[in-house]
Length: 291
Image 1 (cartoon, rainbow, N blue to C red):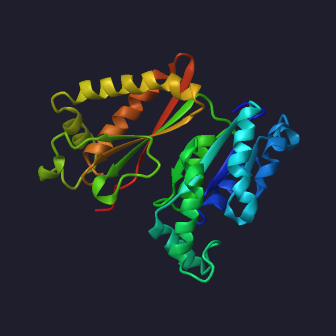
Image 2: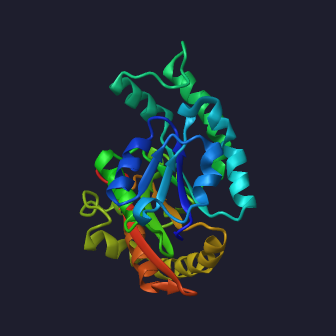
Image 3: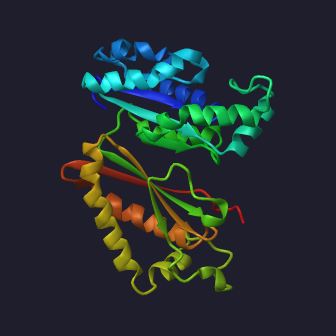
């Protein structure tokens, strides 16, 4: 992030905005909570936050009618040539309902109706904001500590340097991650699940990894896929996208997708740079242990 670029944090109520805001503060960011969107252009015009810190601004539906000004404010930032990154936090309806029920707090748009009605209204209200987000984080399966870790991985030094790639394994039977930018189906590879001695193991073990990657054509496929992603990186950076999530799925998210995720992340890290753009990748595994 450049010194005059600002991080705008929005998303669904209950998806973890407060956790992310606190994590950013711990990383040295200056966080402004619930700022009226009309003030964003004035804030972005500053060179940096207090004591040279980077600015992060939380904007959400708590602002009432002020929130409706957000899209206009973002258009104004673009017309002024101001730089910003829009981060959107999301989670499934089921996860959001469980969180509100756990805290025994009403949804801000619930009124006299059910929690699910408030969530539905908020999704409709935030649809355009989500579609324009630069970084989308699905917090459905993340606890507080895991979400803080994810924030550290993305904004660890208070800046986004080059492009950071999250290579995420998942199981199709648990659903495709909502924060995926690219989705890769690993089910074309023979399933180690049907080999008795490999069934209880995961793709993190040398035995399963060797079996998955040793199948005919898999190594060539991985090499070609990494080359494809590398070719896309300059375009992503040109469009202002500095964080990418590649979701790799198999049936249960235990064997094939895990081994493929590890290998693709390793080969992306071996690139180090693409056209002078720093590349860093890290593997995460959403569904290991769910079976």
